[in-house]
Amino acid sequence: MIYVTRRAEFSASHYYHNPQLSPEENRRIFGKTNNPNGHGHNYALEVTVAGEVDPKTGMVMDLKDLKQLLETEVMQEMDHRFLNKEVPAFATTIPTTENIAVEIWKRLELKLRVGKLHRIRLYETPDLFVDYYGNR
Ligand code: NI
Image (tube, rainbow, N blue to C red; front, top):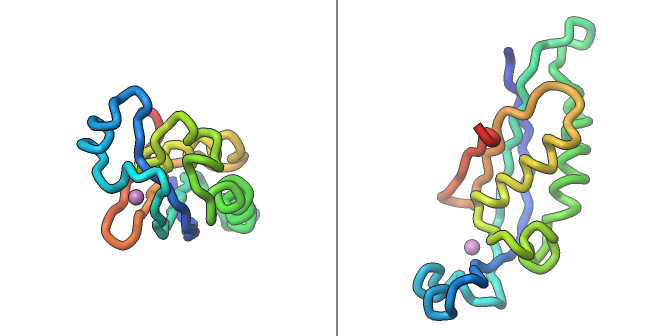
C-alpha cells in the first residue's frame, strides 16, 4: 500500500453557534467565535489516498483527477464562503475544523473512483490541525 497526498489551500469565514443552547450558553462555550458576523481563517487541506501502484502508469491515481476533485468538491464550494450561510451542511452543523474535515471526507469519498480515501488533514493556519480517518 502506498499513500499519496495532495494539498490545497482555501479561505472561509464562520461562526460557532448551537441553536439548541441558550444565548448565554452559546456565549459561554464559544466566546468570541459566537459572533454571528463571523470571522475568517486560512485553511490548508491535505487529502491522502491509499492504493497500489498501477504498473502501467506507475501511479496510484492520476493526480490531476484528484486536483480536479478538490477543485469541484471543496474549492468551488468552500473557498471565500461564509460557511454557515453558504454551505448547506453547515446550516445545521457547527463549522468547526473537525466538522469541516468530516464534510470534506463525505464529499470526496462519494466521488473517489480510484484508491481509497485514507485521511483528511485540515489545518486552520497557523497553529491547529485535525486528522480524520473516516468513521472507524
Ligand atoms: Ni474560527
